[in-house]
Image (cartoon, rainbow, N blue to C red; front, side, top):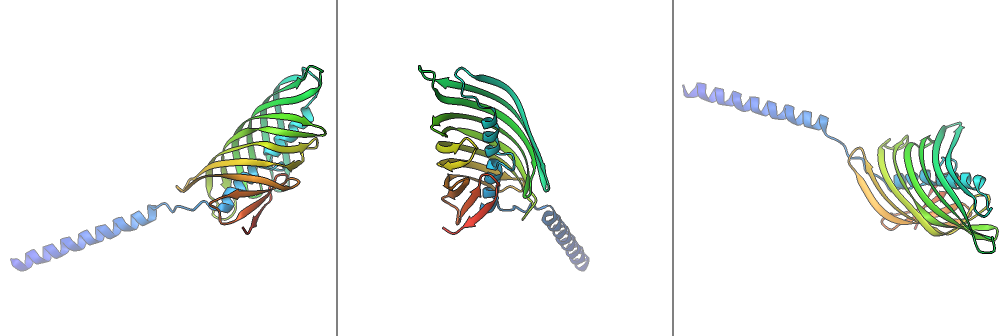
Length: 245
């Protein structure tokens, strides 16, 4: 009788062990692998939000310069679309905008107030983007140049086609009161303050702030204090280059 009880107990323990092994295997199969959001990922997202060729902030400024008038009392509200198709993708942006020219008592142009909202869909070389932007800028006349003072808030989702092909949800705030451009939309000098929060679908997240300082025409150096490297961003093309500190 004692022998039968031992055999039954051994069988029960064996069954429990088999069940635990099965559950463990299933847990491994269902485990979500958290893919780290890298410095390079962050730099690429910021570059895509700024790049003229990708329909980002620099394209917004270019569109404004094509619309702008310096006639006193000039006011415009309305909508605008901007699309481009190229060999490796496309972008499509829809704007709701408002412009107002402000003059002094002598009817001399002083500044242009510009605000807009846009929605952008883009299929780019490195990633695809679905985003919304709210932005307000003051263009101060400085001879043949404009000094930009303002900010924009970007909220979007980016799906990478490179590296780990991760998908991010991003909130990005950019502001400046030192940004100098010419009437062709070239970025000449100044610094953009940048803060971001990025969450990946796999559960990783980063939230930091830093700066993008123009070093040459249309090219800025992204400096986030926690980053191991600096990142050179071409605001026109969106190209990103890793630089040693």
